[in-house]
Length: 459
Image 1 (cartoon, rainbow, N blue to C red):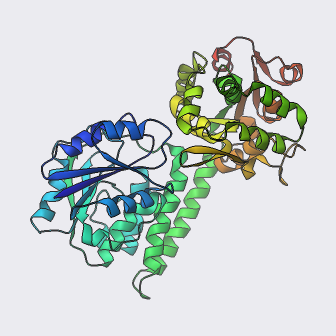
Image 2: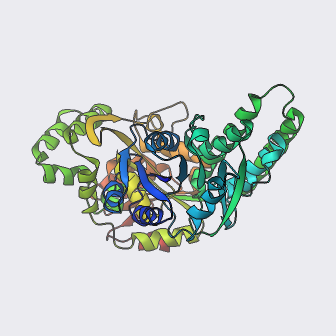
């Protein structure tokens, strides 16, 4: 009678318990996990827990939800988040009871937890102005929903953070019978503040676009303009004051956070060490070299590549250092000339706020040998060095994005590729480096595999 759909991306720690929880609920005869191209063991864990698993060909929650809906065999569908464990015991029963009893066609969960920052600062104010009938929903961005398949199948699911609010608004405009259901208390992590700008923009865009598509006069344009004026003045005041408070620490990954280089470890694991040395020696153009080296991992799966990364130990006091720097008010990030899926993996391990790296392409879970170098690495009119490709350009991007001057950024790296970044940051650390120029340029040299000197020389 009920199908439970669980979109999941890198949720190996929790997805198994969520699947088992869903499968144990009354009237649930089908549990589907839509894997959003995870690079961990999400797929295996979900299958072992009893779910039908389908891989989403295009990454995105909206696409995953649509795919799950197409595979659902039952007329009542529940969507659950894969990262919540445990759920309140009666979650599925409470969400579906009004639908089974034909009182409602769609329900959205509310729960005992402080509403998120984007909900309170973006979604609720905009709904109050543009869709006042929806302002009664205390958790309008909740991803835990239930509905009749016939209603949900009429929708086009947006991508990104706007998908859940888009569903709510679209069903409201279709005069669907909707309600909010209290399911109890849940515990999950709020979005790291690094994600808030993107989340805020996508949620606001979804709400405003839905309003603009309505007949003229259906929303109060004057109030929206007033809100924009207040928001811009508030933003200016916040930026002016936070400029003197925000600080950032940027780590290199290879031979800095990791006690080894990812591509070198791959070379030993997969037997292309000699070819790697040859490709490094044949060309001096960093763009060509990056693209040629990426060809060496063609045909390797995400899982086997990440298994190599996991065998490279982190510097022993990494976790303690990151926790202490965060406690002192620093934003923590990684800039690496390695590959994004590895750097993101390390970011999640250590609890960093962001990670910037080259984008290795995958198709069907296998590396294609192609790599995209993001634009933020390339020289631009604001660049502070003459290199075509440089980490300092990425540092400049971050400085502008977070409104943090170079003088309040700490950079830590080990190689010549980190030289400009360490030179231009407010404070630079050469980490166990054998490059004399880097050691001479850095403000501090770290000669042992420990970040203790970073903590001793910051506040």
